[in-house]
Image 1 (cartoon, rainbow, N blue to C red):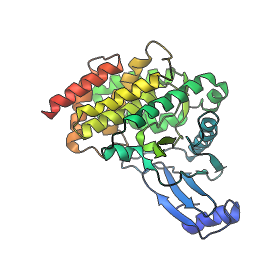
Image 2 (cartoon, helix red, strand yellow):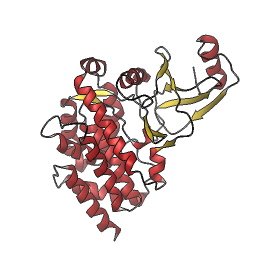
Image 3 (cartoon, one colour):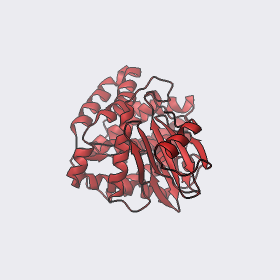
Image 4 (cartoon, rainbow, N blue to C red):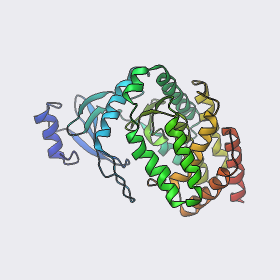
Length: 334
């Protein structure tokens, strides 16, 4: 079954499962993600997004993951919709566990993608406030939910979609940083506090009527929330590097401040782990299996030099990290 084949998908949705009643509606292939085939179906009565998980991800470096991971996203849609405001996360329409195909509500047009807004220079301070607060709300809810802990306890997809391609692979490319990554991996897998999204980035946030809509939940697991914080902060600091604009590091500060309004740190070393994950992800988005496509060779080199330097400074707070990154970016810009 290939959902990118229009006739196969129409037969699957209409004839085999009765999910749609006509075959004259619009089907569009959505690009951008590396882990799924994704189709937008726009019908006269309703619209939906259909996803089919790939075994071999669409990256230059070989990267594999079991397509059964899509069930995590199906469960995540239900869990997130149980406590977040309406329209913050699309609702599940169907999930085919045999074919690993998921259908969910489509976000109506017009809408914008937060990553594209940032790359186009849009002033996004208010949106970043909402983004930090939303992550804090998710982590807070996960602390309180034993059923969610059981549902997302398995970390297998976090290991093969994040730990191996981001941290282990980066360590193999930068042997001098192997100890940093090894220690961080061990600590990450041992610190299990709440539900972690695993893919919390501007790419996975749509803006509709000035509200956030969060997408792509297949890496959700029960683990260390510091990973989500570092994963998200990486994008703000990387874009400051991309635009050669130290002032854009303010997005990182805004995000962290907003996050803390919703969540009290789970332990005394939480913020330090956030620092380590930010630095690790900054390096992983250069040397890992999924590098940031918008960074030029010069920008990658600059980010590598600054991040390596900060890894050796043993920073313990995020404000320290933001300040040091901003200062070093300014020095490299002269």
